Image (spheres, rainbow, N blue to C red):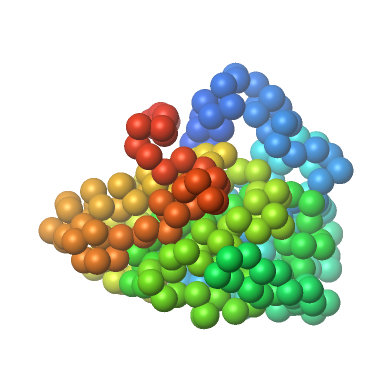
Length: 287
């Protein structure tokens, strides 16, 4: 999966995504897995988390893999947009920028003519402006996150990735980002557009995050795939604690950094997904 130089084998990644999505959708036919999620008329945004640079962002190998999957649903490449808050961060993470040319596009909210929607959105504890890539330029979204430790949130995964879609995330890090992350993800603009969550756990930062710290990186060589971002983050929390234990580190709970926003997202008020181990069906596959 990870070559000696740290590069990702796109062929193996493709097989992993295919196997996971077919299992998740309960079908043996790729078109029946991708087809119900996206249609040929969709413009699909793929929200990347590229803030930590090339060594701690989703691999650019995801680009051809997801393009292949979306083509199965009839989505043309010109209707696929890889994005994050900053074009510079995407480029530094290895994603090829393209906001005006042919084929798939890739750019940040700060790209010319993009920016943030002028209409203020509010929900519970949060208020801000959302990226126009989310509100205007796309009709459907894929969450392509990375699994890593975060010194303030406890864990950065699927739901924390959406801090890159709002103009003022710096305001929402108190109390380990609880309930801010849950309130943000409950916005209808987010809740209704995100149809699939993919987590790159090929290389997991188990401590010292959100920046890359080589001494606390585990080459886990896995991915997480779900229709439920809360369940994915809950499983990611358990996985991160397992890796931390293997590295001789205490749990996030013991460090008073438990990502309780995950439980808030699944509570009776937010209902964004499942946050109890007994409610989550975890299927582990190998390719």
